Image (cartoon, rainbow, N blue to C red; front, side, top):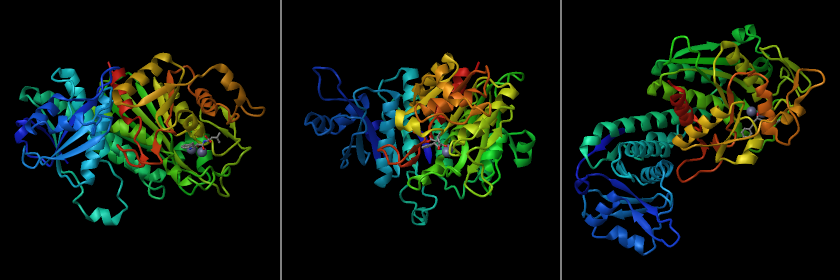
Length: 505
Ligand code: BES
Ligand code: ZN
Ligand code: ZN
């Protein structure tokens, strides 16, 4: 798709659809709709049609509310799409509105669309983050996963070929072009992560995940290394080997390095859980919904997506991705409840439930990150069902030993339009994971089990600044939203890229 800036007079703009915005007036005594400056210009050219529809109450300006007007030659654009931004206009509402509009236009056969959603006028910083959000939103909204649908693969008519971003004064062109580029980079990295999660588990094996990571690293100029089973054995990564031993697929440990900082600085480590399919193992999961466990490598995908974005945005910081990946299968060679595994830092874990496999492979990866001296360490994992109960699919849970890092992640999320919420890590939560026969027990009771899982991980990070993001609820949608289809969300890619920028010198 071609994305470009359009500075032509808005009335003469040739396009299949021109997208303009309106907000809902939020004040106590105020009701009605407020058109953006650009929408007001269009309203003038259409002899008051837009304001008429707004005063009639037909269009209320709610977030994602969409109205189509055919212009019948009154202006050069064939259609005008009025999209609602809700009562509180933020970059996130622009992102969502843009996604809804782009999705709708793709589904109704538009090929050339022009976004004119900017809300707050010409102030440089505001305009640039708004344009970035518009472009990001459109590219995220247009995402589909149709690789395996032969019928849709052969027809090309339902794709948008040209995406214009309208700009009223040509002097800001360079800034707007930069904003477009940032939005494109972040959305493409998110969509890369979504593809990895949406791929079926017979295709995306641990070996294939490593291949995709290496392919991306080559395209984006990152250093890469993949540890095979022999190397993983040499490193004594007993957690990864234990989980992988029931599967015919060998485990892999993917390492990607981006160097933007000082030579001597170890920098940030991003660790991602890469279970390419989680059956639960011997403690097997129920059949209903098990197919969704192809997404149990969402943490790995987020980390790899973030590395792609970071490689393109080039912040002045060193960032290393560590991705342990394997399958969790039941078989005659599988690990069992009752087993004791030894993690690479020497600590032993008494296995209680083979479905709690994520913490085991992360324990090895975190130990490795600590040994290598990275700081801070941020891990991402579809770790617990309990976080889905606690926060739903809206907010990601944050568990950390460092308040400042927690706040930086939450702040990075606000910029990226992703929500994070810190959960407690008090000592008392660690009491249920004491074992009689090993250093720690793999699981506690069901109560507060997302926190218990985080407490296990904490055992492997020592004093290093660390945060764990449980994305089990936010990484995968089991039903579609107006701005996104069912399946992978690519959560945390943009937040991690933003975090790397924040931590850069
Ligand atoms: N991969 C699952 C967690 C999960 C659940 C991810 C729902 C996405 C959606 C994880 O490996 C798991 O099975 N965790 C168990 C742990 C329990 C056995 C202590 C859980 O949360 O039920
Ligand atoms: Zn599991
Ligand atoms: Zn799992």
